Image 1: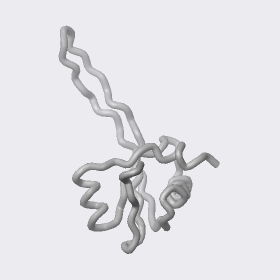
Image 2: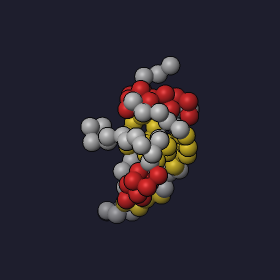
Image 3: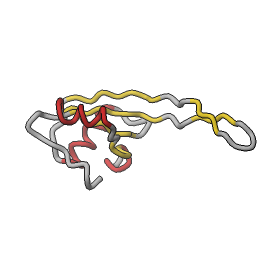
Image 4: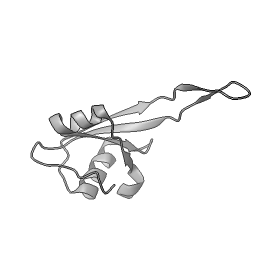
Length: 98
C-alpha cells in the first residue's frame, strides 16, 4: 500500500468547499488519479486522525483554454481526481498546516 502523502496531493479550498466544510463537514482534496476510495479513506484517517464516514470521488476532465499572444493557440488544463470526504459533525480537520 502507498504512503498517504502519495495519495493526497492537496486540499481544494474555494468558496463552495468552504461552505461544505462549515455546514456539512465535507472536505475536498485533490488525490492521485489511480487512488481508490479505500486508499483515500485510510490516507485521510492516518494523516489527520479523524474517522471518515464517506468518500465520494470524481475525475475532473480537462478544459480548453486559449492562450493569447503573437500566435493564438489552444491548450488544455490537466485532468485530476477530486475526493469529497465526509467526517463526523463533532470533528474537524486543520488544513492550515497542509
